[in-house]
Amino acid sequence: MDLELGKRRALITGSTAGIGYAIARGLAAEGAQVVITGRTQASVDGALARLRKDLPKAAAEGIAADCATAAGAETVFARVPQVDILVNNLGIYGRMAFFDIPDAEWQRYFEVNVLSGVRFARRYAPAMAKRGWGRILFISSESGLNIPREMIHYGMSKTAQLSVSHGLAMELAGTGVTVNAVLPGPTRTENTDRMRAERARAAGKTVAEIEADFFVNFRPTSILKRFTSADEIANLAVYLCGAGASATTG
Image (cartoon, rainbow, N blue to C red; front, top):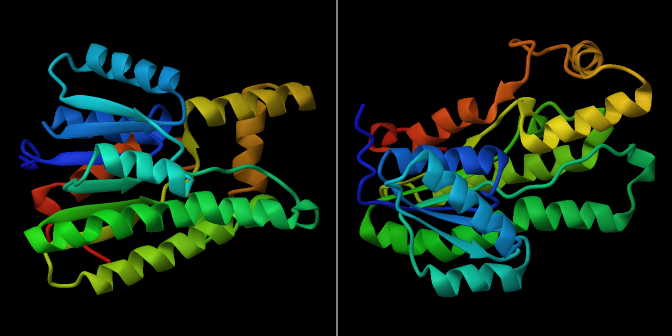
């Protein structure tokens, strides 16, 4: 299928590793011009080098900025005045018992996981609508619907993200701009692999034992019964950015 992305410019927040990088690579492989963002110049440079090794002909650039903050967002806006595709991938997660979560953590999760996407969509969507074409994706989580007891603050932010994406789809109805949310389940990335390895060491177990226990005690309703890969999530995200997904929104 030709996704017709050869003349499109795509911005992916939080894209130096994990799902964000996989989406950037997938879009670049389809011919899109991609903009990678990360908090440090070193991480951005590393991601660009990796991308160019994977795809020597990729059209890519990178911006070092903390996209979770208003100031960081403005840095990106100054460098990238307009895009055809916006992927709000930036997000944080972590386990913490409900009664141990202070106000500051609730606010931090809302700021990073929700307001960052609001800022970027608010900046880029109007011009997309005027041009009559655009794609906005929010990389949410199944945790927005199936709230995990071990990280309720994260689930809260992902539920809010779904409200934003659905409402924005209605706001942009009939403009040619689609807005969708992708809800990955447990996904294997560099960061989640590291976290499971740390939990395994702390518990005196193997990583395999930790992973098996996870699907028994934390995600018993999982249909796959395994961790997905970042590339598997990216496959869906890239399709939703293409011409073939023109009737998929909301």
